[in-house]
Image 1: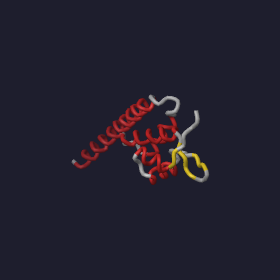
Image 2 (image 1 turned 120 degrees about the vertical axis):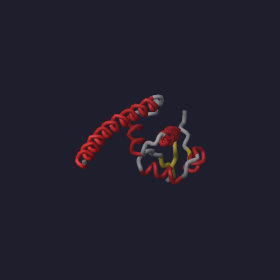
Image 3 (image 1 turned 30 degrees about the vertical axis):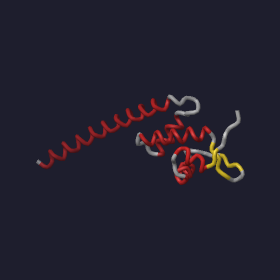
Image 4 (image 1 turned 90 degrees about the horizontal axis):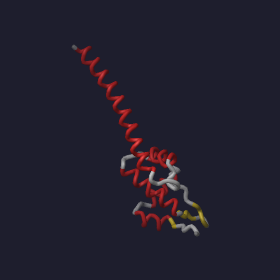
Length: 116
């Protein structure tokens, strides 16, 4: 099966994403299009990765977090793993926030005691 390569304009329209955003994701090393005859060309793998980036952005992940998630969980081999990674990330964040809250509660208690 031959790989279909789309231009930046074609992919932009297909995914309803700006050309500027596509270039930005390339700059941040989230996508890596081929260059054919001096023009960016996007494969179906690139399109899938962009769809995943857009999906993960909806969950509020930063671009650096998205890069880590996609690097840890290569979608080409096992796309159904991404929701599991999202869940694990959220659980890790909740644990960190609970620890931070506990520390802050202790600081607040100490400050309140010092003021009385």
